Length: 444
Ligand SMILES: [Zn+2]
Image 1 (spheres, helix red, strand yellow):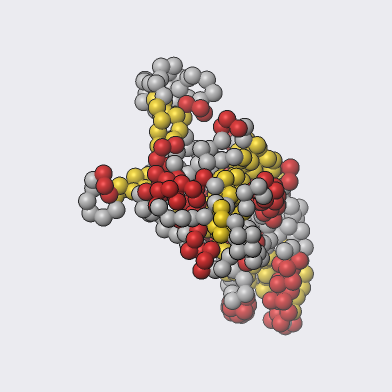
Image 2 (cartoon, helix red, strand yellow):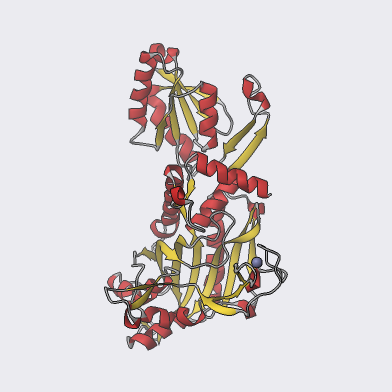
């Protein structure tokens, strides 16, 4: 399985999905940059999420809060106190580990068995607000986007005239100084979270929890992940986070094993109460109809965008031994197809002249490229034999390859090749945009 992961990591680098951050300096542990294709894919996942949970719902609104917040936020949230992992250090080689993740008391680096006593290590990244670097100016990079949805609860509710139940959604940068890293991008120190804080009446929280867990699970099926590679994990009561009444993770079967992809937590009224207490502002909600005043309970579905992306890549990676076509020299090779779901594939169409040394074909292909560009993310590709170009596009998950040949010049039509079936269909140039649009909609 490690071998499969290596192949995915290598393809991601070679084809421009994911690079180590600051690669020319040797990279930085657990930091990754998204290349041209990775950035597009991430955007597509984000947009699908926004469409499903903000555009298609009248009870969820979007905000965009800051990464740096008032330092009091993290006192109130409990992060200063409780956002810690147990850290131990190998006395021989000084590698550091999360105590709860070492299965046996043996250093994975050097085999040493002597460790320092475990201490609680806070995962918040510390920084200073303003030019004075003293205690009074310390703040933290947010480890989750949730807190600005709580601190803005009243402003959002009143400005948008929202009635409980309603939700606030946010996608944004978050930072955690993780001790244990590895497994490619799985545990990164900087990432984007997509979260919803859904405010409900106390007593109705359990049914809303079930509702959101199901909505969340369905989103991953929408991303094209295989059902059999998804499962739920119910956190036992004793290991719940300090604010949670119930937490269920959605796990994905990565090549390195089952691991957390996303989660849903019942945060109760913990956050609104604490922020009321620490700020002195009343964050209770007043129900106009029942005349009741209360702290809403909060159901929080959350997911890391990059984790979803990693699952999409693992899910999509397909090897065909001997290749799919039996007519070319590819027969003996291993062919790779990234079967990324149509809704989120980074490149929708590749435009190719049959050969690049015929100016009339190149000219026509560039015209077609201009026609398609405003409608779809399109790539122009003329280097290499046509078979090689098809395979390169298959490798990055491009849905359709449009080929311009000599017949195109006479009949104003061209071939549209489908990534998954490899079927080729001749389509009139004037119908091309509509034809591709139709195929994309079919999958929606
Ligand atoms: Zn060691």
